[in-house]
Image (cartoon, rainbow, N blue to C red; front, top):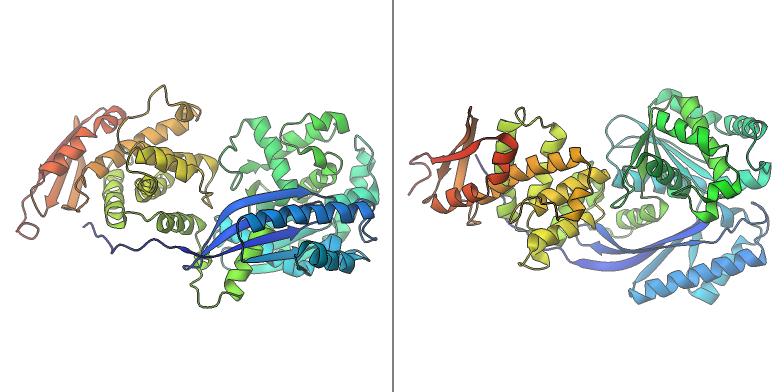
Length: 530
């Protein structure tokens, strides 16, 4: 039976804020809109490389560091003001915490820029990073080890989708380790052994906690981990055009990268695709740390979270300051939460979209084995069906193309890049043209991804046609794959001609992927007819 829920109104933003992570190497800022349902949407981002610790961690900030830091804050303040942010939340981490004149920097930020910052303890920093990762990456009940490699410190979090088992901040950040140990260029075997010995001493409590909550997965966040991921993605031709979030690589892929990269000198590292130029001088200590963690803990795979402390700042604000708002971030599955946040923000046609999704899943279940589809394909089809008409938010004309654009650029959380591409393209091909050679974005995708898109689009097109009127006339359907055809029996409230016509005229793609014609028959039932 197909059941539709009541339509909901579009959710409007109620507040706009800026959140700033004042790190050792870089300042990261995001501008976000907060909504009455407790969700938030990122409008803009800004990263300023400042290298506060140039000259040494735990010492006085140099005049140059002051100048670079205040200049970066002024740029961020200008951005926040241009967006008319009501509030700026700024959290300072290890470089400010440990500097003798960190308090002076905080005061000058207030006096000269108008930004008041909080210097938070390392454990609080780890907790906020954990909240951000759990908000943006799909976790389960199985533990993961989160490693946020910063310039001054590295935050470690052991946790799952429900809670954190262990939180720690260790003073082994890449800038600090480079400054303390001054490795050669290229780094030598002796340098590596010295670093690893230090890591082992510093991470004893992490190892003890890990022994109680074992996992084969590291989730990496922040610049060093993102840069490593970008370099590996470039080596393996993995796409990162839409998102770096949920990018995954294996321990073996990291080892292939490591064996090559660790031999390079500074000039050679500059030529490596994916590496930020300003990280060339201190990236090696981070690469050695990741290699150590993989071997020490028997890690099999590494996943990337594009969310880190700055998003954690926003989440903390939502949970603790905006009392009374429902907290959508409490949803365990970031994929489902992220999709429904987007739906509410684009004033979706809920009754029609839910109805189409239910019918599409019924067709999917009947054809799953024949089309060699998986449970993951089923989930992506469901999300594509929910999202297929959100292009109306921009314009009725070409709304299928608008849907493609919105989905690709909405920063959906919990999805890998190819999954976002599948959802976006399946939504795009729910009407009008089927995939053509002239569709450049589609043909950039891998053959396997294009094949999945065609199969799922074929199903969605028929389901959408079966609600051509948008009035949910089809109350129930059954699907029977036969030798030369796909037979769909439908039970309707009124005459079914428009629905049958709508489905048949959009069945060409399903016929292409199955080699079968579509046959639709109305079953008369007094329970549905008047």
